[in-house]
Image (cartoon, rainbow, N blue to C red; front, side, top):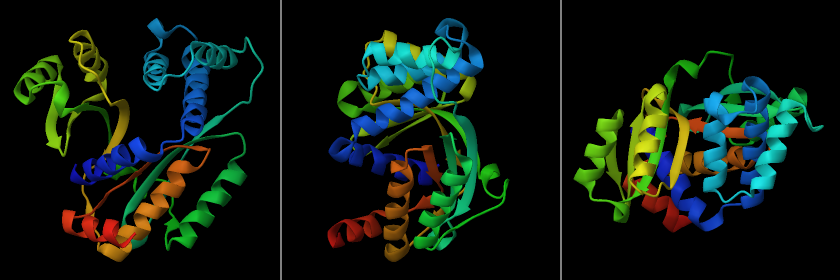
Amino acid sequence: MSGHSKWASIKHKKGALDAKRGKIFTKLIKEITVAARIGGGDPDGNPRLRTAILIAKGQNMPGDNITRAIKKGTGELEGVQYEEVTYEAYGPGGAAIFLEAMTDNKNRTVSEIRAALGKAGGNLGENGCVAWMFEQKGFIVVKTEAKDEDELMELAIDAGADDMKTVDDHYEITTAIENFEAVRKSLEDAGIAMETSEITRIPANTVAVDEKKGKALLKLMDILDDHDDIQKAYSNFDISDDVMTAILEGS
């Protein structure tokens, strides 16, 4: 879990500094559209759509954008038809990488991903080569200033959370998929602001990397995260605090 927590923490910190709202909106619109196409446009009967809408609202996406995305998914409005695909790869240092994407042109997407991996010293793998390492979980981030640690842990565990840990200035809560919505709602009802609330993938094991490989992996993951077709990028690399400090001081 530490690999995921480390990467999640890095993204959390970076997001506060250089989040590109337009790109975030684009990815969320794709998710809402596909969720509505697969499960219908009623969020009450479509958990995936309901979660996507909550995340979009948390990013301050205008309601009109959400409504249009839903209507494109249900066919009430014309729109691009996206296909869900996943890619599995290895990065520098043998780190496993799992990518969730939505694309209207698979040939273009796989070509661009292969090129990005190749420049970083990584490579695409076959289906199934790393997927088994990543387990889907609910993931919620709350700032430490929002709630006392013991009180928050009791609330989260009672609602069905699997675990909660403190990382720097925030708490990270993980849940089973089936308990995610109950935990999120419990925190929302208690008036606790959530920095992140999403379905994610957590690696079963991690790979420690040195400064050189860590720097290359961080750069690669930034490129993959920034790609328009990639919804989420996961990896199982772990960087020690000392190595991370060296990377930041050297950048």
